[in-house]
Amino acid sequence: MTDTTHTPSPGPPGSPRSAGDGAAQRSPEFQLAQNALRGLRKDLIDDAFAYRPLPRTAANGRLTRLLPRPLRGYGPHAAVSAAALLAFWVGSVESYGVQGLLALLTGVVCAVPVLMTLLRPVGAFWLSMAATPVVSVLSGWRDWPWMPGAFICHLSVLIVVAIRTRPRTAAWMWALTALYGFLAETVLGGGRDYTVSAPMLFLSALALLSVSVWHIRRAAEEEVTAQQTVTAHERSRRTLLEERTTIARELHDVVAHHMSVVAIQAEAAPYRVENPPPELERAFVTIRENAVAALTELRRVLGVVRAEDYEAPDAPQPTLADLDGLLANVRDAGLEVEKVVTGAVRELPQGVELSAYRIVQEALSNSLRHAPGAAARVEIGYVLGGLGLRIVNGPPPNPALVKPSPGAGHGITGMRERVTMLNGEMTAGATPEGGYEVTVFLPVTAAERAGEDA
Image (tube, rainbow, N blue to C red; front, side, top):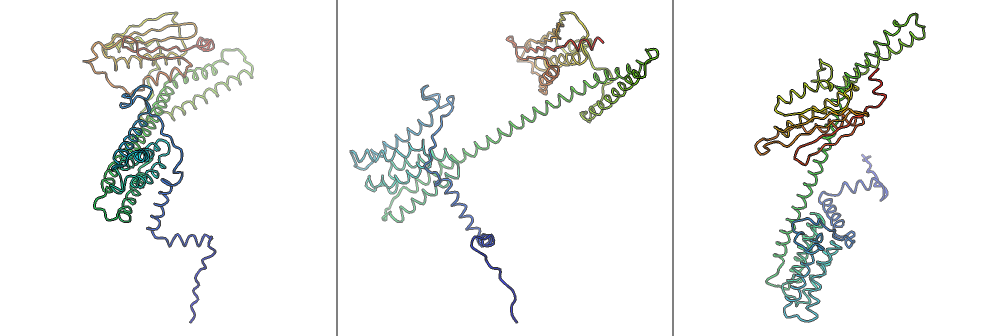
């Protein structure tokens, strides 16, 4: 019996089938090694000698303040230069009898990689690796495989490059350093009894681990700061929407009152004229129908913005005529408040009067919370172009003994929204005496005054 099972052809080398089969045959170990080599190439080989100058730092740091004023902002540069000077001195002095130009050359070879970290950090690592055997040759092959100057040079380069890059790069540098130490001891060690690879690997591991922890902590702090910024922005936006919703609920009564008056007057107008023409009757009917329809839609809008626990007020919305009752309640709560009215008192549009009342109410509430026991003053100025308000309170009499009551922090936001809605102006801030002052101007146009008189 013949076997009719056919094996699928692998296809051309560049076909998807052959690529998929090759990927399926690769073991997890092979893929892990491939990813590791890809990371090595990306961190230490690609653009290794790219120009990346060390930027300046903030000039108000705790350590930079110790530097002269012209050098502030160059603290890291000074630290790297000091490390390079130390590597130069150790490399030229600790040369085991090497003197003259050869000792000077040894110090220069130890210092150059450290200075190179200021401009080309990854390239400085490779230069330090290359400088290590050169220094050993120039110094007579002592302290294999790291001479004292090369030891300080390579350790400084590892720390600076790790600070300027990321933890994965630090891990690769330490691994290559360990590989170099192992090869130097086994292949070129020549049976030496003592080498400095162990101290180098121990100190470098400790330093790189500290730098990596610093990197991780800083990244976590930046992420937390970013999340806090987003949260604060969302909280501010939500507060703004809540204040606008509250204002919309309050103004509903004002607008509904006007629309109801329009509907009633439109219905009663034909009866005030003897034998009105049919066109006039149809016009008033249309006005009344539109007013009723607008009032219905307005109630639907209020239902959208109404909270679940919202209850419609039984009494009409307050105006400036109700301000004396508010001041009496505030005085009963312990705030000494004075009211001053200037200009010709007149009736203003209901929206303006409601907003003015709420602004005064919120400003006095802030005074009770943040300056308990202080005296306040409410100034109301009726001017030709609108209404001026000034609410100012003094400092608390005993700030050390009386702890202010914390509020929700929405008062100023709500006042600004009311003022912005009426195209007004508002300033709020601390006074030189230690109190707080809120100044508001609410404009009233001639058309609004005429409509209110009508």
